[in-house]
Length: 296
Image 1 (cartoon, rainbow, N blue to C red):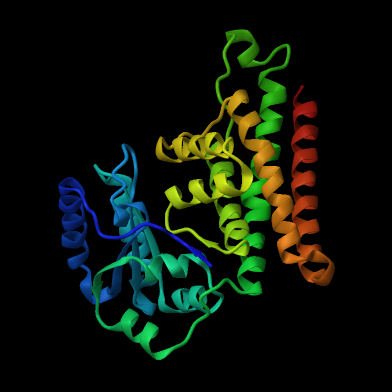
Image 2 (image 1 turned 90 degrees about the horizontal axis):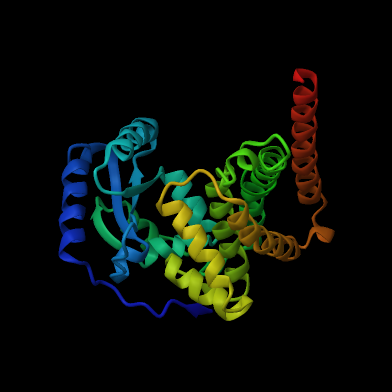
């Protein structure tokens, strides 16, 4: 298994201050929270402009909804960018049980707070260190519709309309952007966690993902992934035609590899779900086209 070559912990003074602010805020809700873990590039000192601080919050089972609402409101009003991933114990145990790469991120993260829950979980139970078949199946189910089919269909529809004879991009002489490019960018990274882990790589950050993907898919891959990171860090909802043409071929390539990873020939239920997602996407596309024709 190819592990990250990074070594923690190298926090800048600014990020140390920000993390203290986060902990101070979470301390107000300590009775609802089991554990707080710092994960991702911040752990390894990659203080890039626009990068997020990634915090995993494991809340108590009965406080999940309340803590989720509190932290989502907090994210909307943050002066600095902090991304909270919020889980309850049943979620966390499932992540570890199926060997999700995210479980590896938690293992290699920095525990900022723990009432004994996380330590007990990792001490008292044995979990797989590599992704299981269940992980690949669940991950692909999450990706196929919302993060692959639908973004591509929506973006291509907008491109045809906006770059047509009467389209806004044609009239202005400049591409105005097409949504949802950020969701497609997220889908690409989600698919890479499938393909990289299946090939024996265990990335702990986007830096790892970019490095390993370059080793496997070629140096030009970095252009695609840097564009994806730009979209996500800038919170850009739309992509230009040129950006989409950069992202789509790689997304298609990854999706096809993901299908090979789950071996659909031996999983008819999964094949049916994928076909249903594709069929639903086509039906939505057809309905939108009919609505546009009727409106005209």
